[in-house]
Amino acid sequence: MNDLLDQTARPVLVLNAGSSSLKYQLLVPETGEVSASGVIERIGEAGSDVADHAAALRTMRATLASDGVDLDAVPLRAVGHRVVHGGPDFSEPVLIDDAVVARIESLSPLAPLHNPAAVTGIEAARGHFAVPHVAVFDTAFFSTLPPEASTYALPRDLAQQHSIRRYGFHGTSHRFVSQATAELLGRPVEELNQIVLHLGNGCSASAIRGGVAIETSMGLTPLQGLVMGTRSGDVDPGLHAFLARQVGLSIDEIDTVLNKQSGLLGLSGVNDFRELAQRVDAGDEAAVLAFDIFVHRLKHYVGAYLAHLGRVDAIVFTAGVGQNSARVRAALADGLEGLGIRVDPERNETGGGCFSNAAVISPEGSPVVVAVVPTNEELAIARQTADLVR
Image (tube, rainbow, N blue to C red):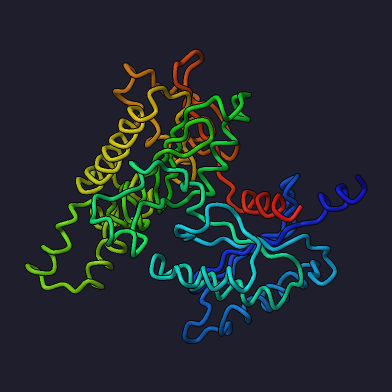
């Protein structure tokens, strides 16, 4: 028992290595207590003092030491790494060894901007910290999608040979929020049918039955699904051929247009939702249309998930836009009263519409609970890491 108590007092270091950034957080999984956090940016860029991820870890150590946190003296339990794509192989967190690193790297064609950076960060961290390292995959939560939801209507041999299927993303957030919603409502997650809406600069929706994901909006890549800050979301697949033949764009140029120049940015000129809301209030026609398209697509997915689940107990908003935009939450519910989906105006606007704590925003007695539940992906990664090494 004393060993267990000692373990639960020891923190986990959570690392999220991007292509040019390293986010970190030192926290105790059982309590959620955060003793340090930060981000190092412009890694490897011209003029940066941080040449690579190994240098970023040294910078992190120095920064923490200057703040009074000596990592050499901290009794680390483990290091948890966020890895975007687990492909068809990784459906749960996994202890990292050389074979796991090689497999994550081999999945880079499925996430060329993310997995190589994760591998670089993992290898650098393994050289710094002689504790267990755990990979937690963004796609893992959606490995439960049934075949009819995960399979594209492509030639079977082609899809199998290249691991082409719908994987889904933001899974760590969807898992955390669905469990936190059950706690908010005081009900076992196994009893609940939920629709979780992760709305930030990247957006995704999920249908969760009894804690198990059965549908999600993102697919092979994070481009599919909802309208996002700079991503188009769903478009006709024939658009690629059209842009290549009629406009003369290359595949890389098309990819850039759809991922970085579309969405709210392409429609209105801004991708920050706060600025979009200001333009809507000022009567900017492009901004109004962008907002309406955003909500239209959101309702489209909510309606589909209502049909797939058959019964919905809770619709949950999370992430930057989901937690902070009362306008979006009210717009989604508008016209859905006949389906039992309502938002109480006063509850929705509490704190100016911004929520840092979980709260129910639907009226008392509503057939469908509408809630705002802040996500905490770092805590989720730390908890999954601790569960695996315990």
